[in-house]
Structure formats: C-alpha cells, structure tokens
Length: 383
Image (cartoon, rainbow, N blue to C red; front, side, top):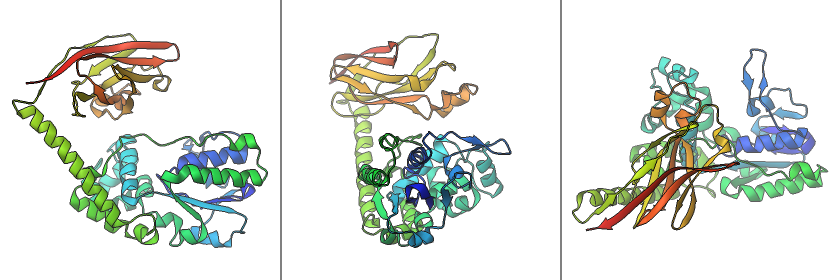
C-alpha cells in the first residue's frame, strides 16, 4: 500500500491493473511535474514503483496493506482489480513476450535457467511451473502473484474496490476527493493515460484445459476474496466461448482452403521502398474475417533514426479508413536486424479489411503528411 499523505490517498496497487498509469498520475498531482526515472548510486535507472517506495519522496511511503484500518476516515482508499486469469495473460504478454524478461540473455532468464527452469517458456510450461517462476524471477513473479498478496484478504471492507473496466468512474471520484482537499484544478484535470500496454493481446483461447485449471487453483484466494467480482464458473464459460469461436474460425479457414468451392484469392500487392523504411509484407489474407473481408499483416521497420511514435499506419478501403495495430512483436525480424532498436516490435495487423473487388492502400501517416507504402487490387471470388 502506497500512502500519499498530503493528498490523503492510500493506493493498494496491483501490478498489471493500471498501476503504472495511476502511480504516475498521483506522483504528478503530488509534486506538480511528471515523473522521470532517476539514477541510483549504482548507476541503475529507478522507475516509478520503486521510487515511490524508496523513501526519497517526501510525504510518500509504503505500508503493509493490513495497516489500512489505521487510516483516518477522511482518506480516499482504493484499489483496482482484474479478472485473475486475464491478468495473468496480460502479464505473460507484457513481461515475457514484450519485455523478454525470461529470455536467456535477461537477468531473470538466467536465474530461471540456473534454477532448472526454461528461459522464455511457452505459456503452458510457465503455468505448470508458476510457483517456481514466482520464487525465482522477481519481476515476473511480482506481476503474476495473486492479487491478495497486495490487497489483503478483506479489501472490500476497507477500500473502494473496482474492476479495471470501471476505472474511469473511480478516477472521477478520486478527482472529486482531491479537489475537495484543495488540490489545484490544473493538476487533477490531466487525463490518466495508459502505460505498460506493450505486447500482443492474448485471448483465453490460448490456454489448454489443464492450464486453465492450474491457474484457477493458483488464484483460488483471489476468487474467494472477490466473489462479487469474479468466479471460476464465469471465466470457465468465457474460456469455452473463446475456444469455440477460435475453433470455428480455424475450421472455416481450413474448409475455405481445401474445398473446391472455397474462395480463390488473386492479389497484386506492390510495396514501395523509401530511404527511411523497409517493408516486409505478409500475404494479404492472414485470417478470414467474414465475407469479402480479410486481415492484412506484415512488418514495417522504420529507419533507426526515426521515432515510431511519431507515425501511425492507416489502411484505406472502400469502407473508409482503418487504424492499424502496430509495434506488435516481430522476433524473427529482430534477430535479422539485431542492431536495430525497433525491429523486434515492428509487426502490424489491420483487421476486417474489405478486399472484395476493392483496391486499397496502406499509408504511413505523420505530422508532415502521409506516404503510400503499398497498394493492392485483390479480387475475392467464389467458384
């Protein structure tokens, strides 16, 4: 639990549940400026969570969650929670796949290997050995430990507890508390923002039945403490639906490719080369998305001196413009261009593009305009 004494705010933070966004926002309200990582005496960067616990922030201190009952009644005490299995999937994507904290070249990957565990484990292996990874790899363990280890066994008795999907409502309540406490309006009107979103969004369907059961047992205290928020029965049903949907998609794709009456796709995709980028385009039809629709995927690596955050990708088809997911993991490109700072997260995907008898364009858009990267004239017809 982090106490912001001047603000009369106590935050029972839970990793992978908007904790970085909330901590940075509260820091700015408390000190009047954005947080920037500081350097410790060993020359290591110290980020927001460790800095708040370091004792170097006047009026900010860490206390055990059990001490929350000692706080005066006029304090705003809160925590934000998330469905336990979905939180695990988010942590695996962000810490293991995106930040590669369990890769063999990373300190935690080395610790795991020394303990007889696999570096960069697939999701099933990590679930099978989850207690060992929690005990061996501090950062990964911190992000996948049960929520009760951060919020205690009676959070609803002492704090405002909200699911992350209702974060905006809690945020407005927090703002009202701060305004009533005399905090300057310009400090609390800044939006919350979103931090630590890197990594592909993994659905429940990636879990095998054994892994789901193992996670339900591992997070049993979370379900017991938050029965009005989450239940094993609800996540099992959601998992079944996700598996059924994924199975139908795979079956439809297999049928379309093998049947004589399947859709035949003719494509002409022309990619242009520019000094500031390299383009690697996948096949246009990555996955079936509905009649006449398809997902467009590929990899676009900007020049090393160009900041990807200054650009976005846009697809144009006859239905209009589509914003493209970009900076997804691209490990093979990262290996091929190992000296490039952006190559390992350069994959993109545009979902549900209308290719039916419709030419289209892939555009790179920045402050100074847009550049056409590729065009296609893809006709989808049935026979």
